[in-house]
Every structure is written in structure tokens, then in C-alpha cells.
Amino acid sequence: MSTNLKGDLGQKIDYVFKIVLIGDSAVGKSQLLARFARNQFTLDSKATIGVEFQTKTLVVDRKAIKAQIWDTAGQERYRAVTSAYYRGALGAMLVYDITKRQSFDHITRWLEELRSHADKNIAIVLVGNKADLSTQRSVPEEDAEEFAQRESLFFMETSALDSTNVEAAFLAVITEIYRVVSRKSLVANEEFESGGKSRLLSGTSIAVSGNDTAPSSSSTPSRCCSS
Ligand code: GTP
Ligand code: MG
Image 1 (cartoon, protein in one colour):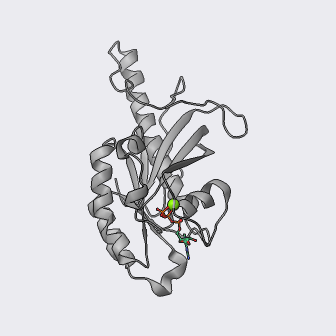
Image 2: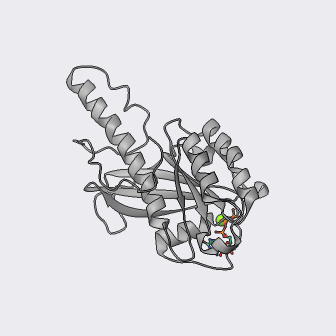
Image 3: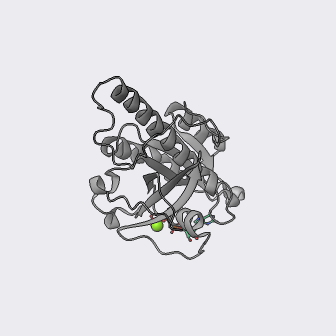
């Protein structure tokens, strides 16, 4: 992955995090991304064909983080080569539609695919989208909460239409990735300082700045239910 070290406003970038969106067709992946990256929403959006990505730069713990968010088709026939899509991903958003039970039932399959192709330390948030349509709800919030707890995932209900929790869901993934990578670089620094070989930094696809310190516990998502 190429690391462009300049942000959207030309500022220095400390980290680049690749995040993937997955879930059935029409659950709202592309609209969640449009809302987060450009604050836009389209009611008659077209199904995604192939792969697209957008970036957004934000500051967490005084570090500039460029989130590179990849979006692909939920429809099997439009999906791009799976392994390439997951390569280098540090975070994932697993999306279902709270009004479509089937899209929630398929989450197990998406999770299996994710776990077989992505890094084992990947940060995952389960997202129940279209929370604005709660009168048509077919997935109780408790079912999803229980599932998320069992699988050690963050969980949040969102609405790309009215913006509820969209930023919070992306921030949950981003801050969790940040927690993991800054802990890794801390351990690597300690190993380096004690004369050991830095195993942990080899092979990571992130841009790590010179002197990272442990993150503070700020911006922890409120609905978090994993360790
Ligand atoms: P694929 O690209 O086929 O995988 O679908 P997708 O998951 O990207 O779905 P997309 O974002 O294109 O949204 C599908 C439809 O759901 C569109 O008509 C959106 O306007 C609608 N939609 C997306 N998010 C929401 C939401 O939060 N609330 C409501 N009411 N509709 C939404
Ligand atoms: Mg799409």
C-alpha cells in the first residue's frame, strides 16, 4: 500500500489505516461511506460494481490519521477478488440492515470470510444500519448485541440517512486500530531500546511516526462491548 504522507488539507500524516466495508447488497455500505467522507446521502443510490475507496483525515490523540475506506459490492457477481480487497486492512465494518433479517443472518458468513482473509488483529465493528426505519425493524437490538459480545466485536446501530452514529461507528474502528498499532510500536520501541530485534514492526503496512507514546483512553466508543 502506498502511504501518501499528506492529508486532505496538506498536513503531515502519522498513520494510514485501511478499513473495509462488507455486508449484503443494499444494506447501505456506500451511503455510510458517503455520509462519513463527504456528509452526503442519496436515496436512490446504485449498487456498487467492483471496488471503490475514499479517504478522510482525522485527528485522534493528537495524531493525524488518514482513514482509507474501501467499499465493494455486496452482490456476489460484482465482487472484486477477495484477497486483494482484504490485503493490509486493519479495520472492518460489518454492515446489516435492521429491517432485513436475512442481512443479519448472513453476518456469520461475512465474518468467516473476513477471518479467513484478513489479519487476525483486525478491528471489527458490527453495524446495524437504517436505524431511522425502526418501525420496520426485524432485527432486535439485543440479538445483535449478544452476537457482537459472543464474537468480541464492537456494535452500533446507525443511520446513513439521518447521520445517527455514523461518525461514532467509524471512530470506533479507527480508535481501536490506533490502540492496537500504538501498542505494537511501543513494544517494538522497547525491544529496540533493549537491543532486541523488532519483530513486531516487520510487515506492518502502516506509517509509524518516530516516537509514539501509549494512547490515552479518550474517545472510547460508548457502545463498545469487546475487550
Ligand atoms: P451494494 O453496493 O449493492 O453492496 O449495496 P450497499 O450496501 O452499498 O447499499 P447502498 O449504500 O447503495 O444503499 C442501498 C439503499 O439503501 C439506497 O436506496 C440507500 O438510499 C438506502 N439507505 C442506505 N442507508 C440508509 C439508511 O440509513 N436509512 C434508509 N432509510 N435508507 C438507507
Ligand atoms: Mg455499495
